[in-house]
Length: 181
Image 1: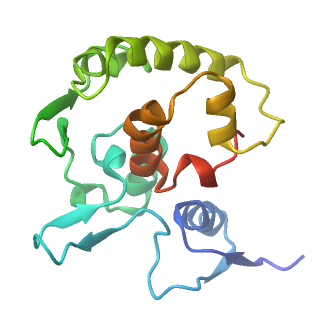
Image 2: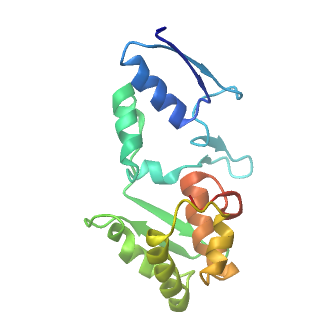
């Protein structure tokens, strides 16, 4: 059997697969359509503000342990700037600080979630119930996540202010374009 492998896609999953296979003696070729590797984990210079915008902020907080392990494996972990907190700003200029507490996930962000000024208490309770329902969801059903959220009582405002915010920052994708699975 040949020890050559072709991986289609140079996103994080493709890069992790290439690293694991190369470590087992395979010769790996990665095919990527873009002119850079990394897939959705990227950053760009905002032309209006000049700021560097990171499209995967959750990674910099260390919440993604598989990503941290991958960076350590390939020797780039020293290049990561781990943040202890994030700030969410609403159009009115108000900030909510998100910082991790020393509790296991998902409770590590519970206190920050409760302080989110852009969500009402009713929305927080509804989101909490839906998070519990998501844990029990039948993942073989691959309906659009936005439809699943609607069927579980999430208002368009809760989807925009919470689910969309979380999914865009974590996956760089909106609830309409994601499946439940």
